[in-house]
Image 1 (cartoon, rainbow, N blue to C red):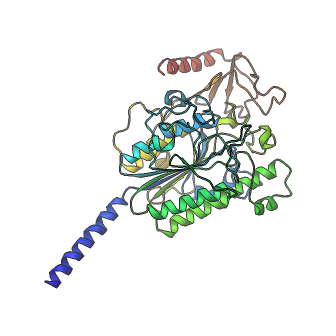
Image 2: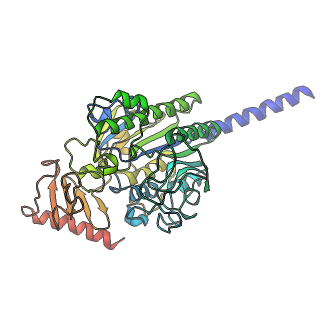
Image 3: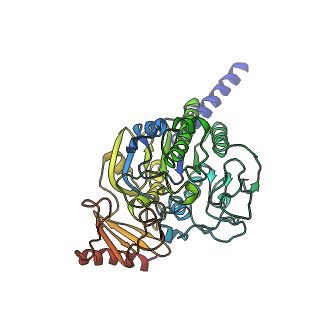
Length: 447
């Protein structure tokens, strides 16, 4: 009887092993979202003074985009767009959610998120880092499809005390699965890193989705000491900002090492994107980010407010390593792109994002004929090389009155001819302005 029992055990073991392997046919997904990282603020994007070897290596292992757009020039609506596959307007969150506990602002609880979609495909789901999509239970991560959550719910925190970093009254803002937790004096990115490493270790037996929302280089600029020393010769505020970017990069390298440690790197989709352009607020010493020839910054619909660094790496399926894609794409496209790679055949028909898989693998044309942005007081449309902005602001170029529109009406540019968006062509090409405005109005009527 012993030998048949052994044979039965071996057969069961073999079946279990095959079942585990079958689970791994679906890739793990890690969606890394940095905060206030400028349009060109990586070595691979041409920043001449930044040391970002891990970000650069990630780009070299996959595909990097040059005309990739955030859903909004501010935090909350950009994140809402990312997690729903829609423009912020249609997702239901068109401006920053307040950072006050008890507020009812935020991403509507009935929104269908990427986490919910992947959980329906058998994925374990985790949010680690910044949230900024609401404080009510149905708007917090565990109410939006995440099985596990660790991080801060508001817009920004001091990285050591974990108190809301803005104005009074001071409020502690660090949570695990909806319950307040305290880690006084511990650097927040170190806490994020530990949470992510532990999660990878503990959930490696089945496919997982991790939304890794780094709250940096958003102010307060509290870089690690070795990077402050490294950039000591740069002028302020670039040195404070650069040190923070390299602090992120170093931590990112350890996250990639953890995947390698458990043999997960080949079958893990890693996406890295900034939520919007760099900040010029006084809390970030009025600047520090790098946008090269692009105009604007955070809050602005000029290019440097919404054009962001973005890349994807998936060694098992994406063989076009080190490739660069110039096609127009947007943060809302990651939702259908990820589901495409996961093997989901039927997507919600209301999604405004589109899968980028053909662009990534075959250098196909952009799936978008146009892109639209809408804020509380201004909007923009891009179609081809043309872009129309309504009542645009430029906090960089207008320091005395940063929230005053450059023009009260329409501002038309041709990005191929004027990448710096310096000249308003609306008087010269009124018919083109009317064409883009009509696109916006049709879209708005359907919202």
